[in-house]
Image (cartoon, rainbow, N blue to C red; front, side, top):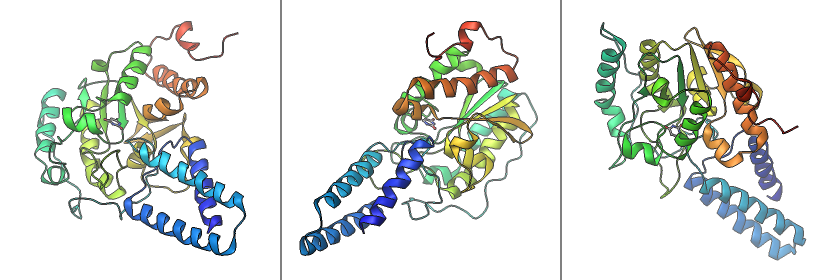
Length: 310
Ligand code: URA
């Protein structure tokens, strides 16, 4: 028992080292952990298990509680969490989209109307939630792709409207740009519902597959020079699930999505919780690569952001 709990703790530490800062723990898992813990407690009393075992348990409890208390849209594990409560069924086939002719703005307007009217998206909303479509310049060079709307986003109907969004805005400003000059969107158009009164859960693979055509259509319209995948869910949603892919290994590297360069980086929410000079610099180096790819001017000052002072 203690061994399996330690294995969980080890896996959580491994994920954290990789750039995953939160994991979603559903109620079923919690009750099973509680049950196991009370079973373990009984065994412990019976056999007078050595005191340090108890310390291991509470370490894990702290770890699991800490991660569950802060679940939010970010690079949490995007394994296929089919057991996660989902309020509505997903159809077998994703939506088929035929875009009208016209300029980027009018095509985006058509698509937005289509997404806002999507019965599947509507069925997944919480009572006061809004569907969140992408926002920004219709012909932006840089297309930032996040995970899913969070609390603020489902209330406002705007992507990246909360704390992580404010940090993303700061990053964009540091690049010498404005939010209006780039495009921001998410893998998922609705905030994934769950059975907890707080936090967010990462989208399931099925949810991401359903919404992908909506995201692809936005990319087809905007035709960005570069797509930036922010965090694990964005990577999984764009490139497909791959259990052997580790964010730590692919972060800062170029991939391709729809024949467009795709830069993989941290989700800003990760920096909100792990914002050391090192992680800030890592994300910033990814942005420098994006700027270079887009032929944006880069000053010496910008090149030096988050480097240790000499
Ligand atoms: N996190 C995301 O991934 N997307 C948002 O829109 C907001 C937070």
